[in-house]
Image (tube, rainbow over all chains, first blue to last red; front, side, top):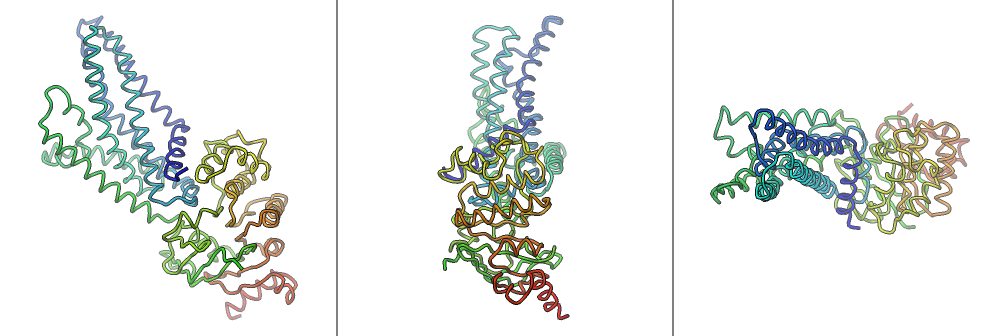
Length: 251
Length: 241
C-alpha cells in the first residue's frame, strides 16, 4: 500500500475511534431533529411556521457553519496535531518510512474527509427531520435540491477552515491551547469586519456562509469566483506554512 | 562487512548549547552495538537525529546507504525503533496499534501481528486498550511494533528503562535471540554498563556530548575486569583526572 494512502486510512481510523469525534457526529445528528420538533411545536401552539421544509436544510446549515462546525473542526485539528505532540504519540508515525509532507497531507486529508462526512450526516438528518415541519411534496423536493446545492458548496469553506485549523495547531503542544487560540482567532476574524468592513473581503473566515451565494438568484459569477480565489489562495498559504512548521518540528 | 549505519561528524546543539558534537561511528551487519553513557550524555539526541526526530546542525547519516535527509522513506524502510519511551495510542487495543503500524509495510498481515504479539508475550491482551497496560507491557508492545515489519536494523533507546529485574532480562534475551535467529542488527543505548556487557559485541562510550571511545567488548574485557571499569577509566581520562 502507498504510504500516503496508508496514513490517510490510519488517521481516519484513529479519528473515528475517538469518543470525542463520535460525540460530534451524534450531536450533529440530534440537533436538526430537536430544532425541527421545536419549530413544529411552535407552529402548533402559535400558528407561526418559522421555517418550512424547503428552507430547513439551508437554515440548519447556516447554524452549523457559523458556530458548531468551526468548533468541531478546530477541536479535531487540535487533537490530531497539537494533542498527539503533547501526548508523545506523534513520534509513532514520524519514525515510520513516510515523509513528513505525506504525514501532514494525510492528516489534513483525514480532517477534510471527516468534515465532509459530518456535512453529509447533517444533511441526511435535516432532510429526515423535515417530516415534522409538514409541507407538500414539492416543498421537500425544493428542500432536497437547495440542500444538496448548499451542502456541496459548504464543503469548500469548511475544508478551508480545517486547513487553517491545522496551521494554527502547529504552534501548540497541547490540544487545549490550539483549540482556544483557533476559536479566539475565528471570533476575532468574524468581528473584525464590524469595525473594518473591507476586511471581510479578504478574510478566509468571512466565507463560512459561502453556500448562501449559491442559492436563490445566483450571485454574479465574478463574486463567486473572487470568493473562491480568496479561499484557494488562503488554503495554499496556510497549508504551505503549516507544513513548514510541521517539518521543522523537533521532538 | 556490510555497513548498516554510517554516522559522519554529527553535531546537534540545542538552544542551551547542550547536545552532541562531531559524533562519527559505523554499525555493521550482525552487530549489537551499545551506546553507553550517563544520563544526559547525548545518547537519545544521537538516536533521535538518526531516525529524523531531530535535525543535525551538521554531519551526515546514512542507513543502508540511504541518506536520511533526502531519502528518508528508503532509509527507514528496514528500520524499527523505540526512542525514549514505547508510545502507543492509548485509546486503541494492542492489536489495533500494530494494525496501524502494519499499513506502512508490504506483506504484513494479521498473522504477522499475532506472531509478534506471541513473541513479546502479549497475545492474551491483544484486544485490551493500552491505557491499562503496565510499563513493562507497553515496552513489550513497543518491541512488537519495532519488529513487526521484519526490520534488518533495530534502534532501541534504553529498552530496559523502568523495568524490573525480570523484565530487563526478558528484553535482553529477546534482543540476543532476535540477533541470532533473525540476523537483526541492533543499536542499543543504556546507562547500565552491566546490561551492555551482557548484550553487545561492540560499544561506544558517550560522555558530555562526545563519543570518547569505541571498541569490541571482547577486546575491552581482555584488559579490564568489566565494562563498568573501562567506562569509569574512560570517563576520568576524558575529564583529564
